[in-house]
Length: 266
Image 1 (spheres, rainbow, N blue to C red):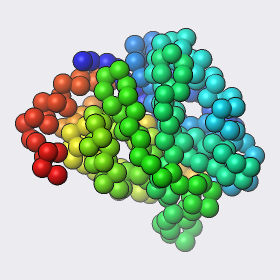
Image 2: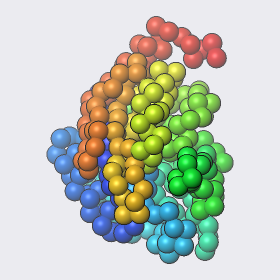
Image 3: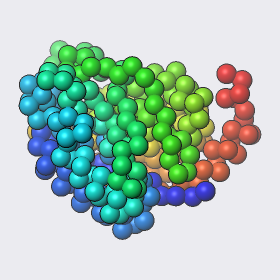
């Protein structure tokens, strides 16, 4: 079974409606190239390091303007859509970092809240404390696509291979890794980690990414990737806003897993 997957690369800011315009513009281009599913990065509609700004500008899950517009777009264009991740307000002062899968009928099919919080100190000037802004998720999520099952993850999750093996054991043949990897860590680890997750699990990996310098001076790595279950880079956008699109053949997963039955021995 063959279909086309597209990953958007964004340089999101702290204005949701501006980000939405860019997402819709690039998504229309992907649909024109016959994309069957479109995936966006982490922080798709709101990119900010300021907790109060995140609280002020985030919306509840079922009353969210940007999500509603993507639902309409998906239905109109008969395309599946993964909002890679965006802040969602679940209480007055509580946010989650949520990945949202929308079907070609415009309905929400599944969602995943980021489990692993990016709490790191890269240097005296570069520190991140996601746990002070978001409530961590507690469950792994596998969603059904028309072509097979998709394991949902977000950015820093990439460093925890046990999560990906669990998703594969639950039937995933595709893995999504929407990200806003820092330029610092991305240049050192991004390609190696993504290729490893693909090879370990003989799964396709879809990794849409944020890129460039953002309004708050944070730099993200870019290099959106679509990787084969054999670890080959099928498509890559190194920098700049735009998209990549690739044909996906599910038979490659089954052939590799049959040739090298490592998943059965684990």
